[in-house]
Length: 313
Image (tube, helix red, strand yellow):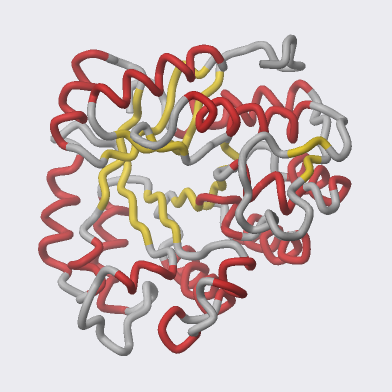
């Protein structure tokens, strides 16, 4: 671990995944070394969720996955039931995942499926009415579309996916939306479009998961990336997308180290401390730090997430 970092305060990780209590405890022990004291926990294991509530009171703001299978079939009623019980079960946030490879897991998807279809409006309206924020993932790196998603008939096109999401955010202006991965648009050529979103939709916030994707793309033009972070410093949340059941110490520590180099330092061409399959055959990924001011780091690491997800949420 590098010591000292520019920012020395507590960290709120607004995008983590938790499973069994054993794995969650292992993750927390490592996070503590990086000053993480609160986090959004996207739940993958019901028993682990119940145990985490007992063992780590106040640590997590819990997010519940809405049924992907039901949403993909426009089967709205069971999802509305999930939303109606969500708060009473101890969750505070709804999560929906529509990265393009979701189509590998769900069969018999209607040919007209899209997340902005009017058939799904009751879901978004219910979240609005209950003031439940939605974390929604709909797209992936440009590099994935050029490699893993070349079958556009099956997986679709990134610009179309982003347009669907924008339609949802636009039509449901009271729905609080957290879009992971810097709105799935950290690529430098996409930052102007992302800026337009931020200027147009005050109900939108972003998180900085994942470390590999952020470091790879934002380091390509640290000046433009820094300008974006300064302009929207009140609406970007620090997040890593780490999963409690995946990997050992290097998996966790490498992701925190990568982002802290990116946000806090002025380093140039520092090797990414975690593997990056997207660049392994082209020379690797190198971090060019943004050296953000301390007041912006406070917002990124702590103040923004605590404002949006306060301790009693």
